[in-house]
Picture 1: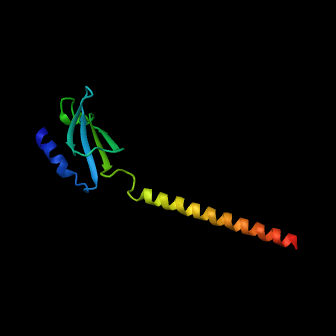
Picture 2: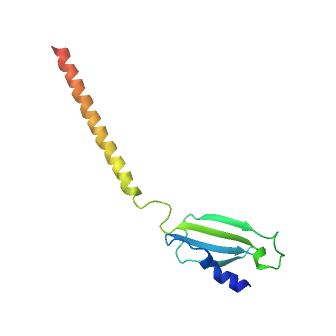
Picture 3: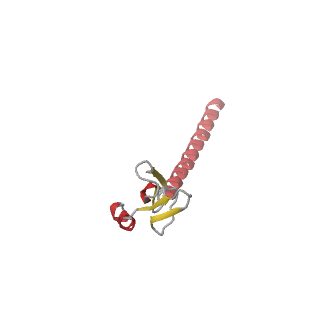
Length: 116
């Protein structure tokens, strides 16, 4: 019963290697029983909670509240985010410099025309 169900949970959930997960059963007294866990910490996991007390009597293991937490192994932030952010800042600075040079050149051209 209980041991067989718990031992098949990891095989039943075939997740890509890029995801980490934890499956917990929350007992009526609030204690959390970890059914399946990976050693990596979960960074801002998505949590899916399921209540099944209506389908089983209170002495049944499956009457607990079940919670599954899933998160990407490397977190939700893409590894190339910092590079793209630096590129956007650099391009913004270059554009500011070009605009400033154009406005200075245009103003000098106007001053030259007015001096004639």
